[in-house]
Length: 308
Image (cartoon, rainbow, N blue to C red; front, side):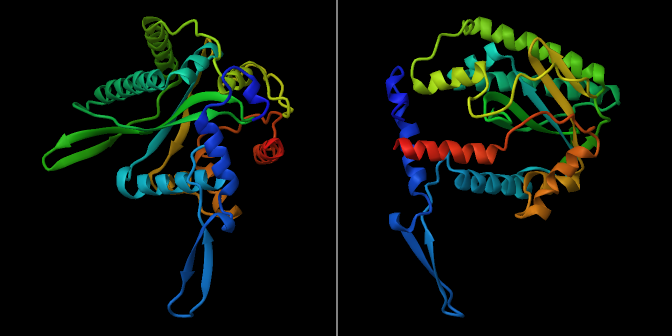
């Protein structure tokens, strides 16, 4: 933080506030609740959490678990799903980082294109008036904790058809490689057209320390990682690449695999269940040099504590 205060306008206040609250998270000296069992009379002290959305891994993990549980229990119907993942070239990533509203509009463009593809494929199967839906998550980092905004959209692998008293689900066959490539061309064209219409390209430079660090992360690897520039991605089924845009649609989930995919149980046994759903129909990727993100994050936090 001392270093960041010398860059531009320094870090935004909410960054400093979230980091300070994280240092107090789970510490009994900063507040706790006393929990007492009425049957055995045993007592337990539970420290207050920071409930932050930034740097606290514990609160982030709990929020992710609660959100996934809510989706599985109350939102998502019991049908097969396909995960669609869209990522962007560096020049577009910087624009999306600076404007949350534009990021939301780009997600809308992407989902409309996916829904239109689902409806066209349904009509080829003789299914009329089919409707699609999705639950999307925006992720802002990659495997080396570099800034990489991209979308993960969980889309039912079929369409919903209205009927008396409700709807019925009609499953569709997996998309072909040609359909995924054509969809990416459509998304590529519409996203760049939207950015040009908004005057977002070329983007302005960083104005404060947070933006400066984000720009540095976009341009090169972090100094405490060992990840070098990766070679061009190898050809995979249901994956398309175009001028820095990439679209991945080869992860299929059976209806019974949704819970372990979204809500892995604690421990090694439960944690190993989630990736199995993606492995069923997706070939194994060639392992590339990487870093242990948990160790890197812990090291970064320790350095931050020293600065404080």
